[in-house]
Image 1 (cartoon, rainbow, N blue to C red):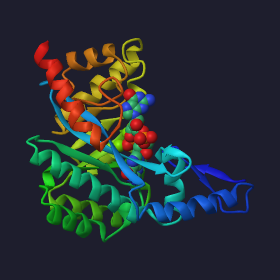
Image 2 (image 1 turned 90 degrees about the horizontal axis):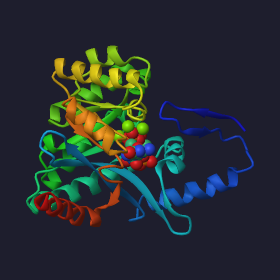
Image 3 (image 1 turned 45 degrees about the vertical axis):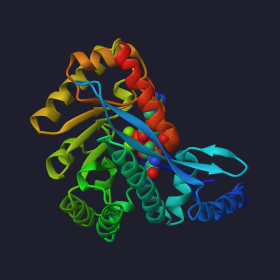
Image 4 (image 1 turned 60 degrees about the vertical axis):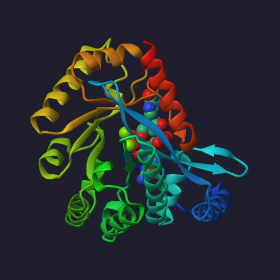
Length: 283
Ligand code: C2E
Ligand code: MG
Ligand code: MG
Ligand code: MG
């Protein structure tokens, strides 16, 4: 069978009667159904402000609670959704759930924000800004508390159209973030051209942070760059205390990773948050 990889590293299967194409068709039918049910849900991974130690928000990461196959991660079904033209529905579903969970947390007195990932096809969707605007209005969530994460490969698609969508989103007042920063083709051109507020350094640069001086140099200089551009830098994939300590020392803004917390279901988030602040108070 023919497979290619897109920039997020997913396998894209060509519909050419491959051995598993019947499975794919079945999974696709199930996915269409899942989009109308509670099977497709965001999990939330906390984002930590390294200067204050406070949790400032979460990233929504879609999961599929499949009736027979268990909890599926996006690498299993996003390529399929993309091929089948289901990304608008998926994005709106994740946005709706995330924004309504966020409203609940804010009503409970937590000044948090939520970040939602968009795909290349979402950024080609001229209707997206209006739809996001309507969701924000109907759920009563301030636009500034929503961040939309895009990857550098959006520039590879129709640049004029993408720009129109990004400008529409910015006009709403939502924040824009470049995800997996440093792994795309045109990082610097992108930074110069696009109206983004946040840089999210790819986790590959964090892996050997404390043992590899080159990785450390890249993190520190990207930090400086983001500061000079007036952008916030998030470092993702922080897996251990040493990396977190190094990032604190370098005055990195925000960290995210398994060392802080793994992505969790909505119902676990407030209990996690209060357990954390109790531990802080006892320290
Ligand atoms: P991403 O946006 O770069 O998200 C970070 C990924 O790294 C997540 O994988 C997260 O679970 C994982 N991660 C977080 N901390 C650590 C860590 O310390 N170590 C390691 N090794 N991994 C960590 P996940 O949830 O499987 O998502 C994979 C990708 O799928 C995301 O990468 C994003 O590109 C995409 N994605 C997830 N949810 C959505 C969605 O709702 N819509 C769209 N369009 N894409 C999504
Ligand atoms: Mg992301
Ligand atoms: Mg990322
Ligand atoms: Mg990624």
